[in-house]
Image 1 (tube, rainbow, N blue to C red):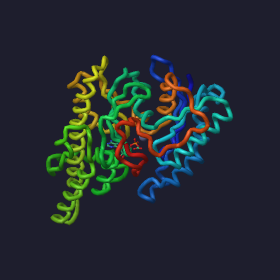
Image 2: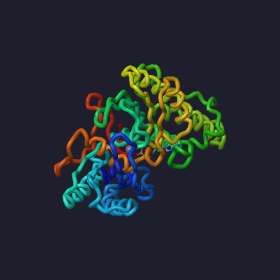
Image 3: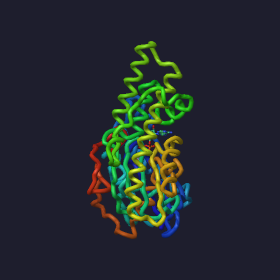
Image 4: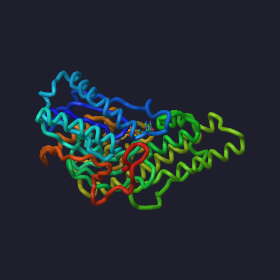
Length: 361
Ligand code: KG4
Ligand code: ZN
């Protein structure tokens, strides 16, 4: 099955073509992602209306480019998949309308896909990981543990109750005058920092569940920074590095310990081939990867972190998820609607609304 996927739920416009063969890894025939960082730079965050307009302008160009790169025509495609939520509603609408147009014009079946399902099923695309597997989704807008039982069966074990970790990296970088995006800048600065100089909290570790909080940690960094500035009149490069290292170490500790608890709950399901998977932009962080790998080793589980281009927002994951789900459900029709909120696990929906970078989850 060859699927054309579209993604436009936040600030990346993407189109991709994926070949799905049951029982095998997916094959990404092409994947085009056009970012919008420049358009939003002056505003300090994503402006939904600007994002929606840019998606509407760029989607058809991305589709053309994806077809060209894959050396295919629309006639060669078996289905059209699109992110139908959760996300910034204007952007999601742009994608859904474009996909409906393509489907109506070509007669190809249309599949509306949950963006989070796209992320969560990526380890099937890259490594054909066996169900059930444990997924930690950590990005600028998402943070949750998902037990993935099947292509459309997700159990949410916990997640952040306030900021997503990527959001916290970005805000802390701003606090200590490091550039955006904050994650890579903090990781780099932390290399020469002393993680023990500042005593920063490990929020919610006293609670036995898998929920996390990163907002208080960010405030603790702010206080530590202000104390240094009050004493010395400013931050030296070493102060920046020590604050970055302390913050990153706290995030690693929280993610590792909460992952340990999620692993315990997962292992109770007796998975035949246990796997801990991670996705999202924050999964690029080597200290975080190392912390998670230690936990998966403790349980003898496989550790899977897809390549970064498939961890961050892309349309290949949407195309693949549609193909994976097509064995369980039929296509959508032209009444498919765009959903700003769409919890994967309706029994344990996220407590959060829309964040700086799309739907928090
Ligand atoms: O998944 P992603 O590309 O986009 C959305 O969240 O939609 O994630 C971006 C986030 C940003 O907050 C960025 O600071 C963070 O991922 N990030 C990192 C690293 N690289 C990117 N965080 C920590 N360490 C990194 N190396
Ligand atoms: Zn995403």
